[in-house]
Image 1 (cartoon, rainbow, N blue to C red):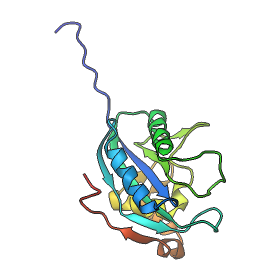
Image 2: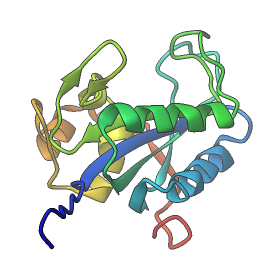
Image 3: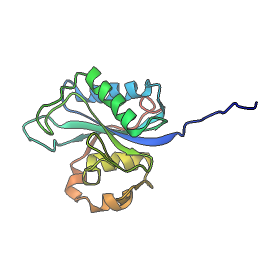
Image 4: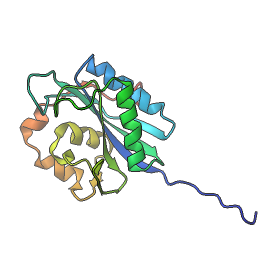
Length: 181
């Protein structure tokens, strides 16, 4: 087989944050998980429990439903971002609205293997990940021994959150076989 080269792309573990607080948010997040499962470039998709959390921005909006998905992909971080933004658009996400305002679907690249990126379009690890109980607790469900590049162990980050932040989270749907593959 001289002259034949087989190139295999490396599978990377990625973590994607999901959130919704409009148009039946629980169903929006569950539909988004199903859509991520149906994405050709994402494999072995697993989902955390779904959590209800208070909005970070203006308080005169509904609570959010949040979750984290773990998947395997050969996509680059920027290619993954493009897939997630297309999915948000398919769900009716309108861009340019109020910062931290209500939304039908929000998908964030939280982690992409051990990659650290700081570009105009994308920052990985997500820049506020270490301050958000609604991200850290679901991450811990998926991998309690996770290490966040540049930030340290997930357990250490969780220990730095205020007890009030963690207590404010409510599981609205536990992990189940209908959400895990």
